[in-house]
Image (cartoon, rainbow, N blue to C red; front, side):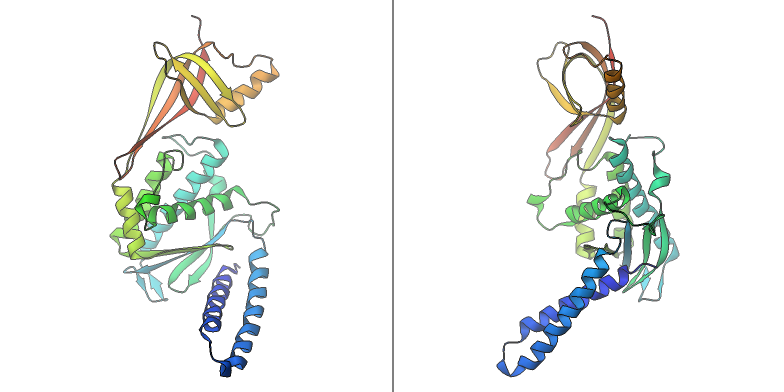
Length: 315
Protein backbone atom coordinates (compact mmCIF):
# COMPACT_ATOMS: atom_id res chain seq x y z
CA UNK A 1 0.00 0.00 0.00
CA UNK A 2 1.27 3.44 -0.89
CA UNK A 3 2.50 5.79 1.83
CA UNK A 4 2.15 8.90 -0.30
CA UNK A 5 -0.70 10.01 1.93
CA UNK A 6 1.47 9.82 5.02
CA UNK A 7 4.13 11.82 3.17
CA UNK A 8 1.57 14.52 2.38
CA UNK A 9 0.46 14.52 6.03
CA UNK A 10 4.06 14.78 7.27
CA UNK A 11 4.70 17.70 4.91
CA UNK A 12 1.60 19.42 6.26
CA UNK A 13 2.70 18.87 9.86
CA UNK A 14 6.19 20.13 9.06
CA UNK A 15 4.84 23.33 7.47
CA UNK A 16 2.57 23.97 10.47
CA UNK A 17 5.41 23.49 12.95
CA UNK A 18 7.72 25.77 10.97
CA UNK A 19 5.02 28.45 10.97
CA UNK A 20 4.50 28.08 14.72
CA UNK A 21 8.23 28.39 15.40
CA UNK A 22 8.46 31.51 13.23
CA UNK A 23 5.52 33.08 15.06
CA UNK A 24 7.14 32.79 18.51
CA UNK A 25 8.91 36.02 19.43
CA UNK A 26 8.44 36.17 23.19
CA UNK A 27 11.14 34.89 25.59
CA UNK A 28 8.38 33.50 27.81
CA UNK A 29 7.49 31.03 25.05
CA UNK A 30 10.95 29.45 24.91
CA UNK A 31 9.71 26.13 26.31
CA UNK A 32 6.97 25.92 23.68
CA UNK A 33 9.49 26.79 20.97
CA UNK A 34 11.85 24.02 22.12
CA UNK A 35 8.95 21.57 22.09
CA UNK A 36 7.98 22.58 18.55
CA UNK A 37 11.59 22.32 17.37
CA UNK A 38 11.89 18.81 18.84
CA UNK A 39 8.70 17.73 17.08
CA UNK A 40 9.93 19.34 13.87
CA UNK A 41 13.17 17.33 13.92
CA UNK A 42 11.21 14.13 14.46
CA UNK A 43 8.76 14.92 11.65
CA UNK A 44 11.59 15.92 9.29
CA UNK A 45 13.41 12.63 9.89
CA UNK A 46 10.27 10.59 9.25
CA UNK A 47 9.56 12.60 6.10
CA UNK A 48 13.07 12.13 4.74
CA UNK A 49 12.90 8.37 5.25
CA UNK A 50 9.47 8.15 3.62
CA UNK A 51 10.53 10.20 0.59
CA UNK A 52 13.63 8.06 0.02
CA UNK A 53 11.73 4.77 -0.02
CA UNK A 54 11.44 3.61 -3.66
CA UNK A 55 11.76 7.27 -4.64
CA UNK A 56 12.39 6.40 -8.30
CA UNK A 57 9.20 4.41 -8.91
CA UNK A 58 6.20 6.10 -10.53
CA UNK A 59 3.65 6.75 -7.81
CA UNK A 60 1.27 9.67 -7.44
CA UNK A 61 -1.83 10.57 -5.50
CA UNK A 62 -4.31 12.72 -7.43
CA UNK A 63 -7.00 14.56 -5.51
CA UNK A 64 -10.02 16.48 -6.71
CA UNK A 65 -12.26 19.00 -5.01
CA UNK A 66 -15.06 21.33 -6.03
CA UNK A 67 -18.51 20.62 -7.40
CA UNK A 68 -18.01 16.90 -8.25
CA UNK A 69 -16.80 16.11 -4.70
CA UNK A 70 -18.83 15.66 -1.52
CA UNK A 71 -16.40 16.41 1.28
CA UNK A 72 -14.09 13.44 1.77
CA UNK A 73 -16.76 10.80 1.36
CA UNK A 74 -17.66 10.63 -2.34
CA UNK A 75 -16.99 11.87 -5.87
CA UNK A 76 -19.07 11.88 -9.03
CA UNK A 77 -18.16 8.62 -10.77
CA UNK A 78 -18.47 9.99 -14.30
CA UNK A 79 -16.26 12.97 -13.51
CA UNK A 80 -13.65 10.79 -11.81
CA UNK A 81 -13.56 8.25 -14.64
CA UNK A 82 -12.98 10.89 -17.31
CA UNK A 83 -10.46 12.82 -15.19
CA UNK A 84 -8.38 9.68 -14.60
CA UNK A 85 -8.67 8.73 -18.27
CA UNK A 86 -7.28 12.12 -19.35
CA UNK A 87 -4.52 12.02 -16.70
CA UNK A 88 -3.49 8.55 -17.85
CA UNK A 89 -3.59 9.75 -21.45
CA UNK A 90 -1.19 12.61 -20.69
CA UNK A 91 1.24 10.32 -18.89
CA UNK A 92 1.06 7.71 -21.66
CA UNK A 93 1.84 10.26 -24.37
CA UNK A 94 4.74 11.76 -22.44
CA UNK A 95 6.07 8.26 -21.71
CA UNK A 96 5.85 7.26 -25.37
CA UNK A 97 7.47 10.48 -26.50
CA UNK A 98 10.45 9.99 -24.18
CA UNK A 99 11.06 6.39 -25.26
CA UNK A 100 10.30 6.59 -28.96
CA UNK A 101 11.53 10.03 -29.85
CA UNK A 102 9.01 12.29 -31.55
CA UNK A 103 5.45 11.16 -30.84
CA UNK A 104 3.47 10.70 -34.04
CA UNK A 105 0.44 12.93 -34.53
CA UNK A 106 -1.90 10.04 -35.31
CA UNK A 107 -2.26 6.30 -34.80
CA UNK A 108 -1.74 3.89 -31.92
CA UNK A 109 0.60 5.05 -29.20
CA UNK A 110 3.60 2.75 -29.01
CA UNK A 111 4.50 1.49 -25.56
CA UNK A 112 1.14 2.51 -24.09
CA UNK A 113 0.81 -0.85 -22.32
CA UNK A 114 4.05 -0.10 -20.43
CA UNK A 115 2.72 3.26 -19.25
CA UNK A 116 -0.46 2.01 -17.59
CA UNK A 117 -0.92 3.04 -13.97
CA UNK A 118 -2.65 0.85 -11.40
CA UNK A 119 -5.24 2.25 -8.99
CA UNK A 120 -3.86 1.08 -5.64
CA UNK A 121 -5.88 3.06 -3.11
CA UNK A 122 -8.00 6.07 -2.24
CA UNK A 123 -6.41 9.40 -1.38
CA UNK A 124 -8.06 11.46 1.34
CA UNK A 125 -7.93 15.15 2.11
CA UNK A 126 -10.61 15.95 -0.41
CA UNK A 127 -11.22 12.87 -2.58
CA UNK A 128 -8.80 11.17 -4.88
CA UNK A 129 -6.82 8.14 -5.88
CA UNK A 130 -3.36 6.66 -5.49
CA UNK A 131 -1.84 5.56 -8.79
CA UNK A 132 1.34 3.55 -9.23
CA UNK A 133 3.16 1.74 -12.00
CA UNK A 134 2.65 -1.98 -12.33
CA UNK A 135 6.05 -2.91 -10.90
CA UNK A 136 5.91 -0.49 -7.98
CA UNK A 137 6.95 -3.26 -5.60
CA UNK A 138 10.38 -3.36 -7.26
CA UNK A 139 12.98 -0.79 -6.28
CA UNK A 140 14.97 1.14 -8.88
CA UNK A 141 18.35 2.84 -8.67
CA UNK A 142 17.26 5.39 -11.28
CA UNK A 143 13.99 7.13 -11.99
CA UNK A 144 11.84 4.98 -14.22
CA UNK A 145 10.64 6.50 -17.52
CA UNK A 146 7.10 6.41 -16.17
CA UNK A 147 8.16 8.32 -13.06
CA UNK A 148 9.78 10.95 -15.28
CA UNK A 149 6.61 11.17 -17.38
CA UNK A 150 4.50 11.92 -14.28
CA UNK A 151 6.99 14.56 -13.14
CA UNK A 152 6.92 16.14 -16.59
CA UNK A 153 3.12 16.19 -16.50
CA UNK A 154 3.16 17.99 -13.13
CA UNK A 155 5.70 20.50 -14.45
CA UNK A 156 3.51 21.20 -17.51
CA UNK A 157 0.46 21.72 -15.29
CA UNK A 158 2.35 24.28 -13.24
CA UNK A 159 3.73 26.03 -16.34
CA UNK A 160 0.30 26.32 -17.93
CA UNK A 161 -1.34 27.63 -14.74
CA UNK A 162 1.32 30.11 -13.56
CA UNK A 163 0.24 33.67 -12.85
CA UNK A 164 2.88 35.58 -14.83
CA UNK A 165 1.97 35.73 -18.53
CA UNK A 166 5.45 36.96 -19.42
CA UNK A 167 6.94 33.70 -18.17
CA UNK A 168 4.51 31.59 -20.18
CA UNK A 169 6.90 30.25 -22.80
CA UNK A 170 5.81 26.96 -24.35
CA UNK A 171 6.93 25.74 -27.77
CA UNK A 172 5.99 22.71 -29.81
CA UNK A 173 9.26 21.18 -28.63
CA UNK A 174 7.98 21.36 -25.07
CA UNK A 175 4.49 20.06 -25.72
CA UNK A 176 3.96 17.68 -28.59
CA UNK A 177 0.59 18.42 -30.28
CA UNK A 178 -0.74 15.03 -29.27
CA UNK A 179 0.26 15.65 -25.65
CA UNK A 180 -1.13 19.18 -25.85
CA UNK A 181 -4.52 17.96 -27.05
CA UNK A 182 -4.82 15.54 -24.12
CA UNK A 183 -3.82 18.26 -21.64
CA UNK A 184 -6.44 20.49 -23.26
CA UNK A 185 -9.10 17.83 -22.67
CA UNK A 186 -8.00 17.41 -19.06
CA UNK A 187 -8.20 21.11 -18.17
CA UNK A 188 -11.42 21.51 -20.12
CA UNK A 189 -12.91 18.70 -18.02
CA UNK A 190 -11.79 20.35 -14.77
CA UNK A 191 -12.99 23.81 -15.81
CA UNK A 192 -16.41 22.69 -17.04
CA UNK A 193 -17.02 20.74 -13.83
CA UNK A 194 -15.78 23.52 -11.52
CA UNK A 195 -13.18 21.19 -10.01
CA UNK A 196 -9.72 21.67 -8.51
CA UNK A 197 -6.73 19.33 -8.68
CA UNK A 198 -3.77 18.28 -6.56
CA UNK A 199 -0.99 15.80 -7.30
CA UNK A 200 1.41 14.52 -4.64
CA UNK A 201 4.62 12.78 -5.66
CA UNK A 202 7.26 11.61 -3.21
CA UNK A 203 9.45 14.67 -3.63
CA UNK A 204 7.07 17.36 -4.84
CA UNK A 205 3.45 18.46 -4.99
CA UNK A 206 1.32 20.29 -7.53
CA UNK A 207 -1.77 22.20 -6.39
CA UNK A 208 -4.18 23.90 -8.79
CA UNK A 209 -7.06 25.91 -7.33
CA UNK A 210 -10.00 27.29 -9.31
CA UNK A 211 -8.02 30.36 -10.42
CA UNK A 212 -5.08 28.24 -11.60
CA UNK A 213 -7.38 25.87 -13.49
CA UNK A 214 -9.06 28.83 -15.18
CA UNK A 215 -5.71 30.37 -16.20
CA UNK A 216 -4.56 27.12 -17.74
CA UNK A 217 -7.89 26.58 -19.49
CA UNK A 218 -7.84 30.13 -20.88
CA UNK A 219 -4.28 29.81 -22.17
CA UNK A 220 -4.91 26.44 -23.76
CA UNK A 221 -8.14 27.67 -25.39
CA UNK A 222 -6.23 30.61 -26.86
CA UNK A 223 -3.41 28.44 -28.20
CA UNK A 224 -3.61 26.90 -31.66
CA UNK A 225 -1.65 23.76 -32.45
CA UNK A 226 -1.22 22.35 -35.93
CA UNK A 227 0.89 19.56 -37.33
CA UNK A 228 1.27 18.49 -40.96
CA UNK A 229 3.59 16.43 -43.15
CA UNK A 230 5.57 17.82 -46.06
CA UNK A 231 7.95 16.29 -48.62
CA UNK A 232 11.19 18.16 -49.12
CA UNK A 233 13.78 17.61 -51.86
CA UNK A 234 17.20 19.05 -51.18
CA UNK A 235 20.63 18.75 -49.61
CA UNK A 236 21.36 17.19 -46.23
CA UNK A 237 23.74 19.79 -44.81
CA UNK A 238 24.24 18.47 -41.29
CA UNK A 239 23.37 15.52 -39.08
CA UNK A 240 24.15 15.16 -35.36
CA UNK A 241 23.21 11.69 -34.04
CA UNK A 242 23.85 12.48 -30.37
CA UNK A 243 21.50 15.48 -30.36
CA UNK A 244 19.25 13.84 -32.99
CA UNK A 245 19.26 17.02 -35.05
CA UNK A 246 19.58 17.76 -38.75
CA UNK A 247 20.20 20.66 -41.11
CA UNK A 248 18.53 20.64 -44.53
CA UNK A 249 18.46 23.06 -47.47
CA UNK A 250 15.61 22.64 -49.93
CA UNK A 251 16.21 23.04 -53.65
CA UNK A 252 15.89 26.63 -54.88
CA UNK A 253 16.26 27.96 -51.32
CA UNK A 254 19.23 29.42 -49.47
CA UNK A 255 17.71 28.99 -46.03
CA UNK A 256 18.98 26.05 -43.98
CA UNK A 257 16.23 24.49 -41.89
CA UNK A 258 17.16 22.92 -38.57
CA UNK A 259 15.14 20.33 -36.71
CA UNK A 260 15.10 16.95 -35.01
CA UNK A 261 14.91 13.53 -36.57
CA UNK A 262 12.73 10.65 -35.46
CA UNK A 263 13.70 7.49 -33.63
CA UNK A 264 13.38 5.58 -36.91
CA UNK A 265 16.04 7.69 -38.62
CA UNK A 266 18.24 7.31 -35.53
CA UNK A 267 17.96 3.53 -35.87
CA UNK A 268 18.58 3.70 -39.63
CA UNK A 269 21.71 5.76 -39.00
CA UNK A 270 23.15 3.17 -36.61
CA UNK A 271 22.41 0.34 -39.04
CA UNK A 272 24.05 2.25 -41.88
CA UNK A 273 27.17 2.79 -39.78
CA UNK A 274 27.40 -0.96 -39.21
CA UNK A 275 27.17 -1.43 -43.00
CA UNK A 276 29.68 1.40 -43.55
CA UNK A 277 26.94 3.17 -45.46
CA UNK A 278 26.08 6.30 -43.49
CA UNK A 279 24.06 9.29 -44.59
CA UNK A 280 26.16 11.41 -46.96
CA UNK A 281 26.31 15.11 -46.17
CA UNK A 282 25.83 17.21 -49.27
CA UNK A 283 23.88 14.47 -51.05
CA UNK A 284 20.34 14.97 -52.30
CA UNK A 285 17.52 13.44 -50.27
CA UNK A 286 13.77 13.21 -50.32
CA UNK A 287 12.76 14.00 -46.75
CA UNK A 288 9.41 13.43 -45.09
CA UNK A 289 9.12 16.30 -42.62
CA UNK A 290 6.58 16.80 -39.86
CA UNK A 291 6.00 20.54 -39.45
CA UNK A 292 4.59 21.62 -36.11
CA UNK A 293 3.31 25.12 -35.44
CA UNK A 294 2.01 26.63 -32.22
CA UNK A 295 0.36 30.03 -32.03
CA UNK A 296 0.62 31.30 -28.45
CA UNK A 297 -1.81 33.65 -26.67
CA UNK A 298 0.48 36.64 -27.31
CA UNK A 299 0.17 36.05 -31.06
CA UNK A 300 3.69 34.73 -31.58
CA UNK A 301 4.16 31.58 -33.63
CA UNK A 302 6.83 28.90 -33.19
CA UNK A 303 7.61 26.27 -35.80
CA UNK A 304 9.55 23.02 -35.47
CA UNK A 305 10.61 20.41 -37.99
CA UNK A 306 10.94 16.66 -37.44
CA UNK A 307 12.45 14.42 -40.12
CA UNK A 308 10.46 11.19 -40.26
CA UNK A 309 12.23 9.64 -43.24
CA UNK A 310 15.26 10.34 -45.45
CA UNK A 311 15.68 8.69 -48.86
CA UNK A 312 18.69 9.46 -51.03
CA UNK A 313 17.78 10.32 -54.62
CA UNK A 314 19.91 10.63 -57.74
CA UNK A 315 20.32 14.12 -59.17
